[in-house]
Image (cartoon, rainbow, N blue to C red; front, side, top):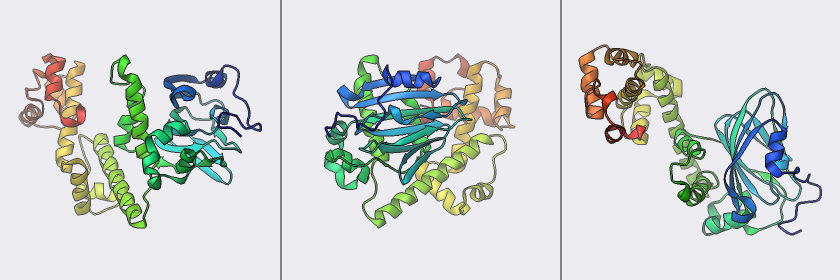
Length: 329
C-alpha cells in the first residue's frame, strides 16, 4: 500500500475535510498554520462543546503522527490493546497505521486542544540524525515502515511548556515570519515529547528532573493562590510531598530564586497589574497582595520596577517593559 493511499477499511474524510467534520460536531475549528500534504505539518485549534460525544478518528491522516496538546476536556485514542487517555493540560501522540485508530471526545466537558499533524517526510528531515533516542512509534514512522497504528504515552504539560503551547494561537512574530516560526515550534515540540532516555540510568535522571519541575510548578501554583497569606515552608513541603530543606534546594536550582524571593516577585507583579488596571490605588494594591506596610511595599516596588508605585501607571509601555521582572517578559 502506498503511503498516500488511505487504508480501505478506514472511513474516508467527510466532504469538506476536517473543517466540515468539526463543524458537524458544533465545534470551532481553525487551522493555525500549515498544510499536511504540501508542507508535512499542520497546526489546528479545536474548541468542542460539551453536549455531544465526538468520533475523533476521521480527522487523522493515514501514516501520520499527530501530537495532541490538550488544554481542557477528556479524550482517548485507542490502538488495541493500548489506550492513550488525555486530561486537562496533558500531551500525547499517536500514529495512524494500516489498521486505523479509534478515538473519541467525551461529552459533559468543554474540549480545547491543539493538534500538530506531522508527515513522515517532515519527521525524517528533522529527526533522522537522532533516531536512537526516539520513541519506537516515531522511529517506525521515520523509517516509512507499514505498521499497525500505535499510541505513545501521556505526559503532563509543565508550566514552561504551557507558555509554548499558548503562544501557538497568537504567534509573537510578524505574519511574514510565521511560516518559519511555526515550523521551528514543531521541531521544539518534537524535542519536548518524542524522545525517551536510552538507558535506565538516564531514565531515572529524566524522571527525577520531571518530578522536580512538577514540584516547582505546584509550589508556584500554591503561592499564586495565596499571595496575601502564603503557607509556611513546612506546609508547602507537606503539600508537594518532600522535606522543606530538599524543597528549598530544588526550587532554587530550578528557578534561580528562593521561595520567599519568588513570592515577593509574584506579589509585586500582581500589584503592577492592579495599578495598570486603574481600579486600585497604591494602598489598595499593596493590601491586595499582602503588604501591610506601605513604605515596605513602595521600597520593594521601586527595586523591582525602577519607579515608585504611584508613578507606575503613568509610565509608557516601553518604560514598563524595560522595568519588568524576568517572569513577566
